[in-house]
View 1 (spheres, rainbow, N blue to C red):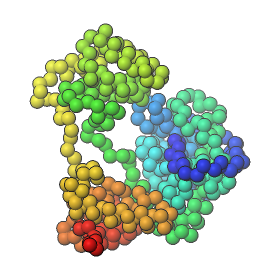
View 2 (cartoon, rainbow, N blue to C red):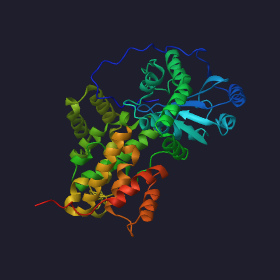
View 3 (cartoon, rainbow, N blue to C red):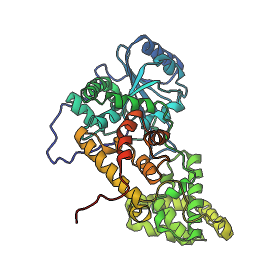
View 4 (cartoon, rainbow, N blue to C red):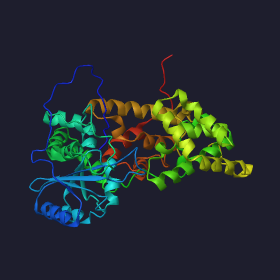
Length: 428
């Protein structure tokens, strides 16, 4: 599990907490065969209560985000570590859990890879999202455990290459600890949300997560290449596309993270220079010598190892007709940048200013991040192109179409309806 720490502004030294160094029942053996999987399923089915789950991936090392270890814990059954590479179908575990509540931390990170092995939640509790709604200043798993249980959880293996086999014993201890106290955290956090009158908010958000399958797929993901903004020439843009697609194909073939084949910075450099020979390709690679040593090493190795494929990609672009080159920019249905609203749509700018001020005051009063009240994109879309007729029902319908939950609609719709489209009158 990767950490998403939302650090506090406080400069005070954090208190020293006792360290949770090992699971109370010891670290179980990793399950790698069907017999062991069925024993785990039987034990889980025989127990009661929520099930704590986690998954470890190899982001930055392997292509994609598949799970390389799945951890489960249920009171009365114990903790189980399962190798989903040896056991790619975890349907027996799914059947054993049934309709019981899943408890995860940062569920959107793990749900897609768990779905790949046949696991889908019917009911869910996300301790990270719940902690945000509860107003915790830091919402990484270690920080949440410290807040509610007063113990410290080491996170030194969160960025490890979990495709490693066999997995080292310290990593397995870390993995088992990720689910060791998750149910207790869930119980205390649930009580906290209830006391703050936010439990219904959280439950609606959790219910929406049960159908989460992953972030939306981009039609042209190569346009997200870091440094792309520095390229304006259409043929250079086409070289970015061909180099990116070539890198992605190599990464899939080798099951390696694309950045380990060739860094984005090198794609941008090659696209700008457009080398046509091996020698020119190597010269372009030397441009990254002033950057970090690790990136320069990756760039040099990737440039040399796959030189023929980079040159082929560049040659394809050289042979393209002007009409076949990709456009410099692609229009989408998103509202324009907010900084342009005052000139392009002053009424929308006034409405946005009013609603954001109202939501900011509400967020501060209820101690909840403003982005959890409504996503910024949803708010901008409704205010830039308001529904017609501009009434309560139409606003609510539009918010629902964009994925807002009922509690968010009840909160935000009145502010949108009240928003003026002219600046307030001032006394002369």
